[in-house]
Length: 198
Ligand SMILES: N[C@@H](CCC(=O)N[C@@H](CS)C(=O)NCC(=O)O)C(=O)O
Image (cartoon, rainbow, N blue to C red):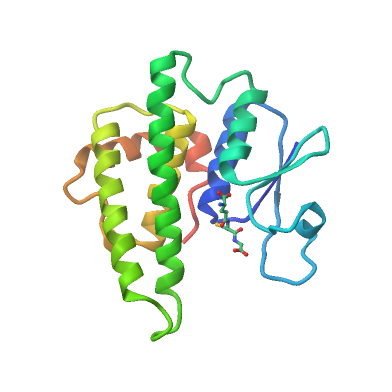
């Protein structure tokens, strides 16, 4: 399989960690920069986004949730807990972390638009959504030890992205449990090696 990514993409980071932890043979290919005409990814479909996964069977998957799900299935379930109730918790976490990532990503783009072209209402709404997500992650992960599943991979990637693009959110403030969990996750080599460079 081939996994296409760019250096600091939080979505691609999830796929990169999942690929490594799956134990599968996945070639990781950096396709930066994305914003060019006739990009090589166009041969795989209309999106030209990362992550993208070319399977051994010749299919091409876009969308992080589809890619990481495929990697989990191909690895015989290595990326999810074995116990059914733990699977539900991991899925719940993956959902909250996914919507946090989408929210942070949207707000980051909004923040970087020209003054007068961005929407303060959107920025405010997404900042409030992110704060609720940080609280939810703190409730769920505070006091937990580091472990890999698709939920924790999504959560550590979203929080790492917040450190880069939304340092002012100060997500660690008043959330000691979440901060300690994050530090523990950063000890895992696949997580440490994919930390955004900023
Ligand atoms: N919904 C997509 C989002 C992926 C995404 O937006 N990736 C960004 C990089 S972080 C990208 O490829 N952007 C290129 C562009 O917007 O042209 C997913 O879950 O994989």
